[in-house]
Length: 217
Image (cartoon, rainbow, N blue to C red; front, side):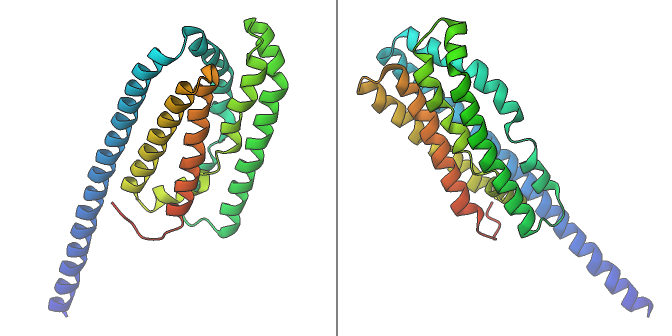
């Protein structure tokens, strides 16, 4: 009996070590891919900024900066922590996932309509009439931010590599779209095209990959 207990304890210890080793690998891998994604995004933004500085006027950047003062504040309240709640919930049901998805989707529409409604006020405040037509397009990023649930699923599955690839590829495509729009002479609107394109691609990529159940590090 004692021998059997010893073997069982040894087996349990072996499993614990393997689990610990596996979790350590996950943490290291997650930190690596998160750092790669962050640095890659910053690098892409820097390169795109250098190109756009030659293609657009300073006034174009100023217009978008004025809008981001408003939308940046709204973004703080947009997700409402729902994605984090799904990540930390022990076993979210299909109903939980559906509820979060629809709250996120309807909030995106509501925020976009709010940005559209207050755009004349923002334009008057900054004395920039062009903001009235630009701001509704910027607000589309709220409507297209539909990847909260799928991003949460990716985090729960510890698929950090997939998240990094989706994020960087979406950012690259968005910056390219901005440069092309600037070359076509769209001016300040070129700076709107990129974020909208990036948001749509990131949501689509997260949805396609977040539906998988395997863990890919």
